[in-house]
Image (cartoon, rainbow, N blue to C red; front, top):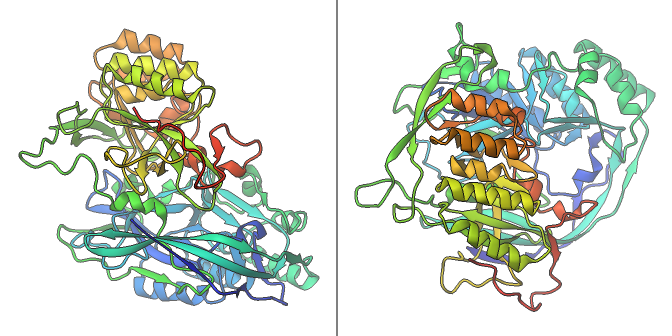
Length: 595
């Protein structure tokens, strides 16, 4: 990992607009927002294989040139009609209206959501991981944390079918004219992968912003927007909600209200457009495409605006984990890799209930020390992000196999922390059942939160002899990508006060021949007995679906690990217990918390 810091000269990050037609959430404009980018994505969800759904990912701020970019990508698709998955803070009003009309003219569906890319992602150069797979980009669509604010609902209104899931956010407010003049200093992080250097992220070290000016909606503009929404079949209530919300605020429209206003066409989520199982219907939806083995990449890749000086090109830090070598490494003879095991996976498409298809998913079995997997290690980690300094979140990283010694090590680490309550971020293929139950009880006794995610260390790995903790913690980033919690680990998770399994994390469980013991433990942790009844019906390890975990109380919410470790967490009021101020790099270092 190489770090480079440089100073940017004073510049107008956003010009002064005299025409009040740019409509974006003012609280979000202070961040580096890239212009909207259009990418054709193919689902890589387990179960669709050769015939998978595809969609157009539309993420970023709406600018004057966005409609022209959208037309170009539609032209490359020809007669194919792909749904749009949009995630946007808003932007130019006239451009949003144009986008809505283009969407309606082409009879496309739209949903609010984000796309989590795998292997290759937009902005990554010379990626060959998807060669021979018939598509340039693969990923999973999710509504968790997605937004469509300010001018974005105008674009959204153009969809023939319009859905906003229960975890997405659609908000409106008054028209805003914004003026920002900013002096910024940047720090850029690079990573060298296979001899090539990639820019991972560009962070703002310091910046000074002027405020923003607001204007009420003019009668002429109100008539224009009302006519547009009427043409799209959307009710008057949307305009009324816009006018009633100050420009300095943003107000979410509830799902029931959106249905009453006819802003959405059903209570469904984006799953009805992107879930793997939809391509098993007859006839299959128009966004399904069958790709034979060893196919050439699709010609349609991405249409995006070039980033200007105020919007440096970025590769999300969450993709760092995707580039890092996974551990244990790929199984080859003599590489001490664990044998393949099998997990029963059940289709989660609501169209197939109660008779859904099931299949066996081959994956490594629970590892044990000496079989290519290390014993669970506990390390105190501090979020590596300059934007949160000097007050950053910290957590306990728990990665590896659970053994008979693991509860004792966790207890020793908690003793060194005293009264501090840090959340536990766990990634484990399981291990000793009785030790997992002991840790779950210890976690509940200490009233700790738990999230399934992987911690990637920045700078050095604690396993290295010369890697020392600074100010009592190691630098790192937590991501639910590649986070794994299987069998005994899932029972450890059950002990958390808050229990989070993000959309990219995996959790699987079965009774392991200890039905009565596990039943008593789940009752002790106040987990719904429906989970135990579900486990009784299967004889092999099975991946649990998010709705099953939430309904049974095994998880307390759909949030990812960012809820406990995000860079902006310590700005919350009240401030979480796991935030700690480190005043200077020369502060007195605490004893490294490493067991």
